[in-house]
Amino acid sequence: MDDEQPEPTTNRIPPLLFTLNKDAQSAWLKTQVIAIKTCLLGNVSNVDPIRSGTTIHDEGQNMINSLKQLDGTFVCSDCGATYKEIGWLKRHMQKKHDWHPPAPPPRIHAPNSTKTLVISSFVKMALLARDTWDAYRMGDGDRVFRNAKLEMLYAFGTGRTKYRLWLWNMVANELACLTEREAFEYKWNISVNLKGGIGQNIPNDDLCELQVRRIKGPLATQGPNKSFDSAQVLCKTSHVLDQLKEGLQKRTKVFRGSRNRTEADKSLDISKMAKEISGANIQNDSNWESFNNFKDPLERIQLPMLWNWMEINKEIASDLMAKK
Ligand SMILES: [Zn+2]
Image: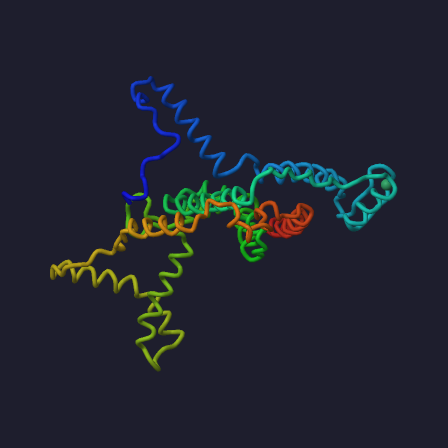
């Protein structure tokens, strides 16, 4: 990596920084963090307009919901007209009482170049993915569920219908549908630790895949004797067999290979990539033309569509809660 100029050419550490007091040092560090943040993430938040617009929408929706009677009908607060469906009441209020559903707030588009937009968009998603993965490894349920809300918005913006519904259900179960005890267990059993030690947790989905692979292997050796019953026996005995094997290995002092994956040395790859990138002259804006129509996933969200989708899923969630 020596030939890739490891020393920064701008924003160098002041030579006398370590002789300054702690406050001055942290002030310098803060300016650097802000500079990096502005450079990589941009100045404008994509989440704030979604949050403020949704708050206004929710207030309007709560007002309408307060007109719901015990028998499930909706009564107009101004003239007492009764409607079976919320949609009809809304139409009546729009026609007769000049009521307007809240409009989404205008989006502020920062005058960024395509390059800045693409990079900041990528860095935001990359940081979110990295943070979620770290949260799973640390078994940090709070962080996993906090990130799930933002990931749901990204899934909505990129049109991933399966994942947005899956993430919605995850959050809805945690916040409303499950009992307090179930919600607590769901949040704090979101990952599992097979090896022991801090930061070694894996998501439950991965554990499920591992288990399936462990059963599939021995099952494949059964040939024509393979059946539902034999698979069931395998599921019940795989843990016992593992323990027997471990016991035997201990007693006979058999060398047991490490279960850790070998860490690959990536420094050569990074050096190669750095050379390729600097050779391709990516810094030049003219190379970013193919991204001219790029839009950040959160910018792609049509708020009325998001609200509508959320209303439908809230109805489903409240039905589930009522059935309990
Ligand atoms: Zn009315």
